Image (cartoon, rainbow, N blue to C red; front, side, top):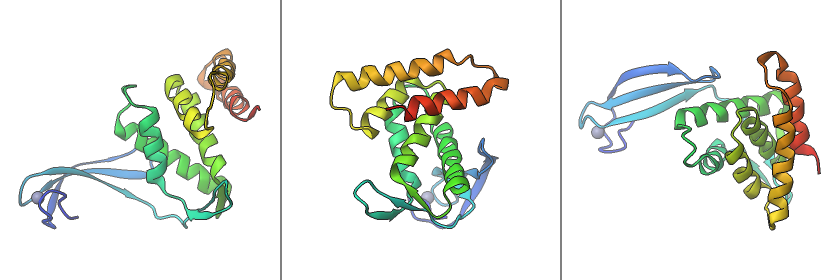
Length: 175
Ligand SMILES: [Zn+2]
C-alpha cells in the first residue's frame, strides 16, 4: 500500500480491527520510510451493483458517494468516520442482499434515511432528506419533522426493533 505522503510502498500495520458490521477490516498503518500514519480498509469485493438514476442513466454503485452524503449530513454531530464507514458497509450489504444487480438510486437514499432514523440521528436525517428529496420550501422540512415523530412514537426497545423498522420505513415512504 503506497504511503499517501511519500509514495513509499512499504508500511507496517499498527492495528487491525473489524468494523461493526463485520464487513470490512480497518488497518492503521505506518510508512516505513517517513513514518506517516494512514488507514486502509479491506473488504469483500461484491459483484458490482448498477444504480439506475432518476433520469434513467445507469452507473456503478459508488460507496464513496454514500459516505460523502452521510459525512455532510452528520457534520458536527460527533459521529466519527469509522462509524460512518460501518453504516455504509451495512447499507451496501443490505443493497446486495435485496437488490441483486440493479437498484434505483432512490432506494439508496431510503436506506440511508432508514439508517439515520434507526440510529436516532435526527439532525442528520433532516439534513440528508433535504438534499436527497431536494427540499424547496419550509413545508418540506416541517413534513419531514412530522414524519420523524412517527419514529419517536415507536417505543424503542431492542426487542421492538421490528416495530421501529416499520415506523422508520413508514416515515420514509409516506408521501
Ligand atoms: Zn511515507
